[in-house]
Amino acid sequence: MDEDETVRISLAETRLELEREPKLHSPENHSLSDLTQKRIGMHLRAMYDTIVQQPVPDRFRDLIARMDDASGQPFDEK
Image (cartoon, rainbow, N blue to C red; front, side):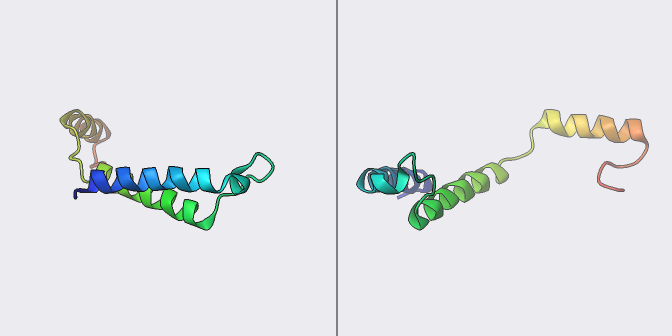
């Protein structure tokens, strides 16, 4: 089972949880259960990890290089 499949299963489980506990998620009570908060956090971390692993697009590298040339000092030095 790959990571995408795991996330899909977890999302389905989260939806089922929300259906089973409607009183916790009613308009009067705006808080989420601890389990729901943990699952949201897990999904956000998985999405962030996927994005961070992507290479920087060439157009961004070119833009940073042009900014470095224009300022006279490398972008990462302060």
